[in-house]
Length: 326
Ligand code: SAM
Ligand code: DTB
Ligand code: SF4
Image 1 (cartoon, rainbow, N blue to C red):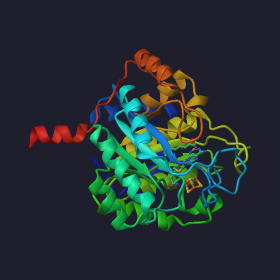
Image 2: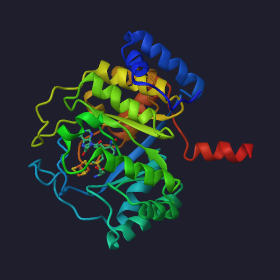
Image 3: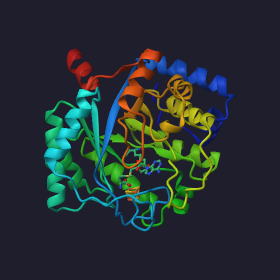
Image 4: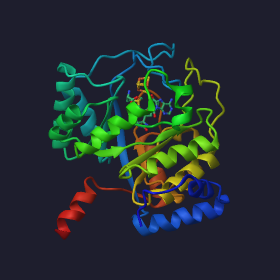
């Protein structure tokens, strides 16, 4: 049963379950709701890099920190489509384009992004974008261009948010998520651990996600990538068991959602990633770069998939299943 009425105490109790029991419960639900042999493979591309006006404390692309990221203007459509084709050939079924923008503006750059969305959709991939805040009208235009998903993370709890970002509010984030929903685009929304937040903050973030009117179709769980020059560069490395606990709790709260083992995989062994899949993760970012930081190569991931007996999930699976039964 999919529930949107979780109360904080229930989530606390799940999160604090002894680890092996928690993994077992999550794995059991995962089997009931999903094909556990399948992992969705998404590729990220930074279509506009760096020079961002925001002050997100974790982010290498904020203009105010010296992180060595080269600022790059919005890419050309043809170039983006080449990357998308390459990702498709390597087995990705979802292509996510990220821009270091605070928000979308109604200008020629946005028109170019709409063209990119059309192009990637025509390749038969699920298209996703993460472009910052959106109005309802902009979400509608993206939907008309064929956008399948929009990524917009809550990152942490509403209480801890101000410690990490001051240039926009939690409510701004929630408003964009609502605009995306209204446009009929699927929602991809999750967070980061390792920002210096407490367990309580993590539980509260999961509570917000699991009590949205509809669960996000995908929930990325990122481990902070500590980038030199950002205020969080000296944070402690995320403990693998914290990652596993977070993934397992997300899986129990939102059994039918894609839970993505997102940033941080280069610092995890295959055995550690296997624990995350066991605990209910069923999606990854593939390709040797996330937006600006390194990620395992396609070859390394293929080897891991073979070893663990995992296979990439096909594109538009939900829709295909729906059209067979209707
Ligand atoms: N500018 C847009 C925005 O902030 O919504 C889109 C791109 S932004 C880079 C997308 C997400 O990447 C952020 O919300 C954050 O969750 C994640 N992210 C950025 N830097 C990260 C880091 N160093 N480690 C882990 N996740 C990170
Ligand atoms: C998400 O939750 N993680 C991705 C994607 N959504 C856009 C981004 C991770 C970025 C890690 C830092 C970087 O490579 O710049
Ligand atoms: Fe800009 Fe997004 Fe990075 Fe924040 S997370 S600094 S909004 S690119």
